[in-house]
Image 1 (tube, rainbow, N blue to C red):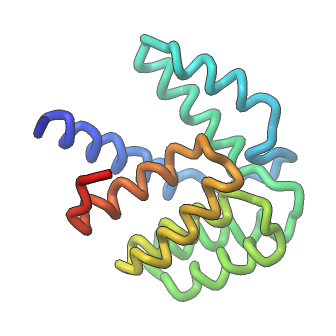
Image 2 (image 1 turned 120 degrees about the vertical axis):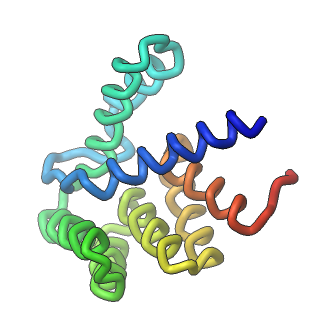
Length: 157
């Protein structure tokens, strides 16, 4: 049980680090992109860890894609600010993304991540819920929710 928990935490931290390091892309897609269904189907049955990691990266890339150039710019600036621990600035940028593009799941997820980093767990949970309303398969949001529950010692249903 401890090894499984340690592995989950390690995987979550790795995904979190990748999420922070990856730049926001200005392509034309989001959580509604039809490519996601095939990627999730392949990921579900993938036994090769390298390929599974590549698929995960492709999914993250698609989730970061947004039609609105101003939202894409704010998302990228928010990620950079969060990576530099400029949390107030990052919060403003992610809020701008949410206000400009409220149906864009990754805007909510990025702000949820930021709120987790500053120990605002209840607010983070609210943004995670918004993320999951838009993209129920968002494993980053689900991992974040799991991390919050671990921090709060909530191990039951």
